[in-house]
Image (tube, rainbow, N blue to C red; front, side):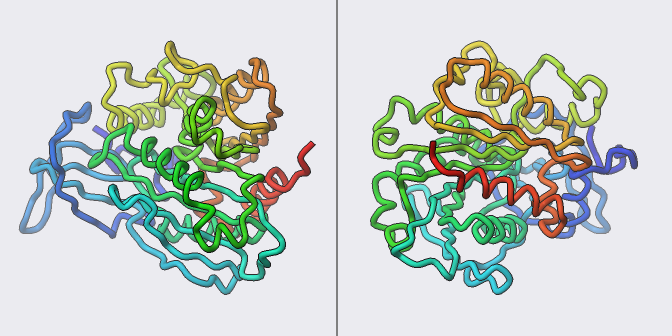
Length: 363
């Protein structure tokens, strides 16, 4: 059983930051059906109303015995609007009314219609179970990215597990990309400011995973004929697998934690070797089929996912994919550190690197 009491001081990395920042905020959702779990059940003591926990997905959520979902992380909401620090404007729109999938669109307040800007479609992280486009930390990070890179950005709000197990997040994200291809040119801000010829898919963690799968799907689709993706930016990509590599061999605690996250969100008999999470598992599409011209992988030295990101880069550059790939490693930092504190020098350097990748001349 994974609880806050099992965490040793040496392991208080970004996972514990989630707990410290968000644990006081709880949201309850009623589930339509109960998911069987690899986690033991547990009772939570309360002064006058004890509750029994069936699934503990530390540090993100708990599923109670009655099927309710108790969310522990990333429940705060930041409104869209003008950010005075970056001078970036944003607003929220519903893009898929049938499912409620939405997006937050950003552009620099100083943008001029005659100066078309690169278009970034962004997918947030959160292990497919937490966060949103209105998460204050993501909102601040994307304001910084838009200001630094000078882009128009569409941040996609896909539905989350466990209420919507995978592949819902992929299908929602694909539907959002279809919307960009078929309707985006008629959306006021995109029509006015975006250069659809300079389109990028960017994401962190689970969002990088989503970008990978969308780029593979684009190759032989109608959407791929409508949209040309120039590049993909992957920040701390969320890939995994059964065979241990790198630091996974020694960091058993975090290895088990990531195992549990994936087994919770993906109802698959292939477990952590499902092609959704392991791009090199049996049955996974060949990475040579990525529909983009260039790709940037950013990893962090202390991240348990670091070696998977490096493996992805190595396999890609040694495949038949005709594009150009780059990799950057940030020393001394952990997973999505730039989201937790975008004000550090290393977070700013990461944004500058991503901005340079987006704005580099097309060769």
